[in-house]
Length: 445
Image (cartoon, rainbow, N blue to C red; front, side):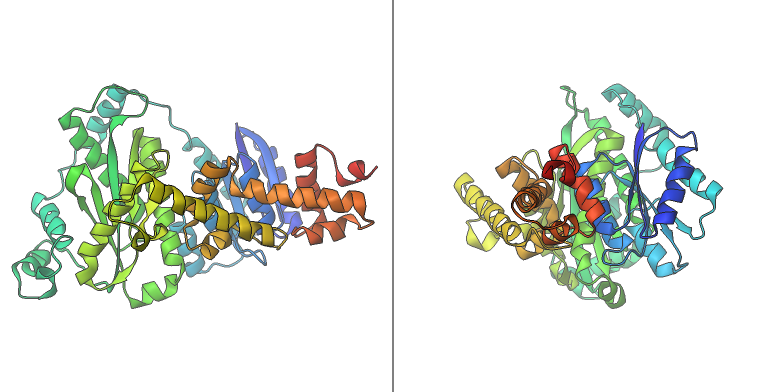
């Protein structure tokens, strides 16, 4: 049974789509409706949502922003976008963020049901034993392995900061021969490091199966990146998969400050898909974005250092180099160094939330930006060090303040809703009842 969230600032459309899905006969347990992006975000944080159907333009928070936040909160949530605008730029961005479909209003009922049915049917895949996994991989991956010389070339490029710069060097000549185009001028790297054992299994992977698994991961990388990213992927040391991403001036200009967020979402998607479809754990390292091919070895160094942090956080799997203040510690930081830095991040986040929890439109992304870390890492650290996730903490502060105002003042529901940061009294009442088990009016009585 699946839970579906419909987000659209037109209530009639929300109710119409909900009614259509309720009568469809699909395996649906619960349908939630939200009239703003912020309301939808609360549902995503509080409920077990499998599929989000969102309008692309909803006032204060757009569908694109909602998708970005959803990828931070629950990267496994599937998305179908609906829009009144047949705009290629919107469609391209939505698909880059992982939307499974992009439907134009007025919505054709059959088209919507077909899209939802397709997403739900392909959502689950039964768990496999290690033997079943490798049998399946042998059956499906019969293509030739990547060119060894091309793999060797890309490894040389990310370790040699001089040779690739001059057009008449041997390395530059090989790059042209193997169609390795690195024009940039902006570059970043992602590296996937495979676990040596299958989740739930005690047997180590045989060498021949490890090679097959590495090839399957390379195919997942290509599947996720080929359509929308200018990239070069390759086998790296330790059976890692390296990915060089690049932007020209126009592409980077259109990405702006979102480029790092997109890289992080891509890293989380890679981790999620490898875990889901291959049943194997991996660690993903993400570099910063630098301008110039000469920095490719530095980017390779950064992804290796980012992966290093899995030593400290073995229950976390996606690491962005920029989250860690390397200049404040030694090359090989002690456990005390790491704990002190993490405590500082959590405390600053807590202070910011305490001062701003009543702000309308407060998001995890904003709290993270204020603390100069990625939302993914902040969310992980906050839960690890406080025992509660960051948004549960925000809701706790809002609910306790609203209870105080309800019992000690004559403010009306809409006034209290306004004071604790909710977009609408209706949404405030839903959250209040879920938190306290009774409505504001029932508590007042």
